[in-house]
Image (tube, rainbow, N blue to C red; front, side):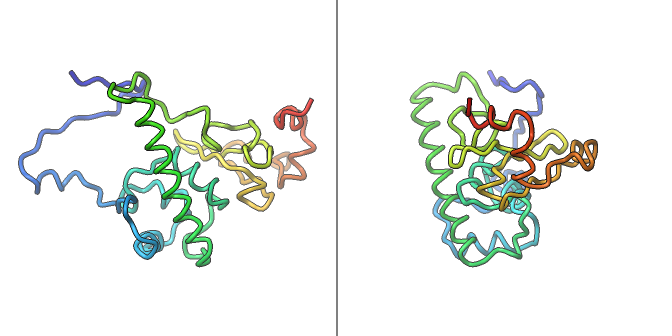
Length: 202
């Protein structure tokens, strides 16, 4: 029996014959496990996109997705909207290390949690994540409230102090709605009601 734990019901099942037919379902993304720094850089900068788009594109990297891209970028202290062509050698190395460490760590956590059984609850939101799903909650490094960019059915979570040099990134819908009231940076954000509460300060 095949069941889908999610509520959106987007899963599908295909039956194919032979490796060639199977290959037709492979988007072609590079596997992270065992990938060298040089191979990572080549895949990363093959096209010029934002880091968030690049990390989540299955045609570029295999198996990262929305949640873990947030965790990787938080660990690497890089902005989700930074262009891949503008990365320094040091930033690429930092991103590579963060990608390897984050995916290895979470793979082991999920293996340990499941053991020999089958996952009882499938979710991209984990309480011990550093950024993903933590909008408004304090950053685990600096305690600044985690911010988000909402687009379509996804969202990007990031720390404005650790990742964007204090800049609060514009949200496609909310920032347009708020206009001049949208906080431009972390100093502006800190003056907003509820900031101290979000940081856990009483």
